[in-house]
Image (cartoon, rainbow, N blue to C red; front, side):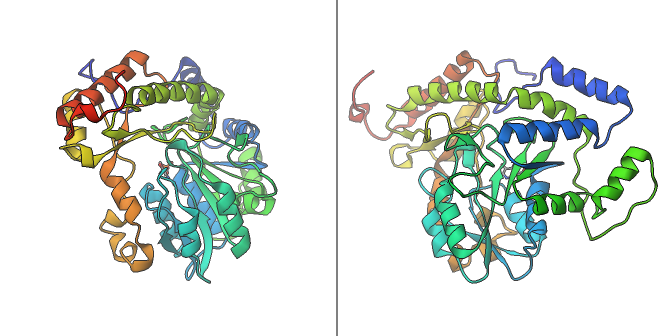
Length: 401
Ligand SMILES: *Cc1c(COP(=O)(O)O)cnc(C)c1O
């Protein structure tokens, strides 16, 4: 970084263990999917408590594989949130199904009541997104799914390290479970392999089907013979994709996974520091912390109170940048992307709460190696910008600190 004082939005935490394991992999002669990927899958299964884990080259691939393996396709509707990365919606389109948008709750996650209102005879699945690492109301979603015979695929791109009702996502709770959970190891996510992902499931048949689809539809047994014994014979059983994760990437993932709880702790400490600094500021709202120990704090999404500020969100981010602080927005709602607008603007996809949410959100820097001093610098900048732009006198503020 040319500017040493700049506080970036995100910095990955890569240690010597990751570097050494990558070097060892490069020297081993085996670069593609092999022993290290098998180990990463075993470790991830153990961490999440899921029955099956398949390493893939992105969370996008994980979502696509789950939808395809569940035979969701043309004529089917899949309900998701407008406050997500475009990948969630693109994968629904990849299988030829129709995305349907449900509005959000004040916490930013999908609203089960809005999902219920948008279920039709064509609805086949729900894809909730655990925004920022805060778990969705899965019990309400699972109940709806059971009542209407729907599949549930969790987009857990932000949620490696998130816990729900006392365990990792991906586990059964009180007789309920999702069909599949899709995880991301993209460079900015809670743990990373540079690019990468995982799909977990407790359904053995679904796991087997995803494994075949993950590698061109080549039968698993034939592939194992090909890879392990140097046998040249394999057969394509159906039209599949090229979604496997390489051992070079898994080498990073194995060591990132060992640090996942430490990373979550570090993120939580920064988030708590921010919230302590901001909770008495009338011009902003702090993000909900959820149940103790559940939130993995992938993002700290500050909400501006635009009725009390003389500047908008874009200007707020400009002001942060002027003070050499990186910030971002999660997310530009799906209907605001030109390609999605034609269907996302339809009456049954209207999400006014999501559009209003978008106007006031700013994601502040948050990463495990961030120092408290850096967090305080960011907090001071936010306080300064607020002080310079408040539209009501500070006397309104309850209790001076
Ligand atoms: C990052 C992200 C994805 C996509 O993850 P990739 O691993 O980059 O494919 C999907 N959904 C959400 C909510 C994300 O933030």
